[in-house]
Length: 386
Image (cartoon, rainbow, N blue to C red; front, side, top):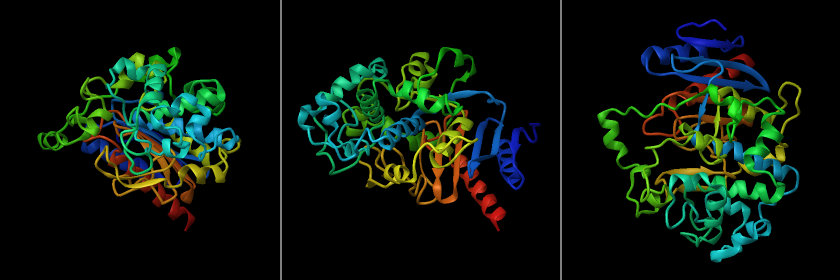
């Protein structure tokens, strides 16, 4: 656990290159700090943290990487035969049939194809935190495009859709379901709703620090679009600027269980979560069968995202690798967050990893440095196999 080059933690024999790479990143940018953890074959082979802004037991908000935890909850309901992707959402949530949505399937709703990236009138921050309010608004909302004809990032609403399905089928909130069925039994250091007794561990996410050139380029981001555009509506820009108040830096946001963006955890927690989905970890059986993993990680929508304006690929809530999100093999699945965090499982390589940088990346989303660290893990693993 001794530090070297500003890096602390442990690596298994054959993975020292990951430590050296993280140390190099810190040497290049003294403002940089991050956690990185990886499992191969259900065994933790890398558990590192470095830079002055983080620590071994620190946790922080991971923004949309929270969606991955919600997606695992949905997958577990599929695993147990309680949810059918090809049934209408309204079978489980009758009120959802309003606004011409009676035939929208769970598959369509949870792959960003339902036309519900936001509601009109747009939402205040407190309304985003209020699950019952937002679920009621989504139930009556007429889709903004004909469901299934396009896909667009449901950045704040897909967590509400997943949460309501979990509540209708199980009776618990998705945050409580995750904690009681997944997080606590498997010692996974991640929370959709952060308990009071873990608050002392929480570090604020540091805001972006763009260069003048980056700041200019970011003006075209959907997070800075006009409030009357589709993208602006999805991010409630007519009401507030989403990055002015960072949801996971607000105690109300961390406690609300907002399963699109309010989760808090460590790289160790994200890595262990995804490792548990694809294999046995510390004697605990794998959480999901190969058949369930295949069902939720299969590409459901691909191509231009009409909210983000980028080519993307979606599974069931999960993101899939694309030209921007180079997270692993074609079998990889996971989710990034606006701050740069990543949680990924890659069955092809029997690999899972988590990455949490302290400062938000610019322009936002998956941090290239985290993806590079994962590539080094894959290279080390390949070399060990010969």
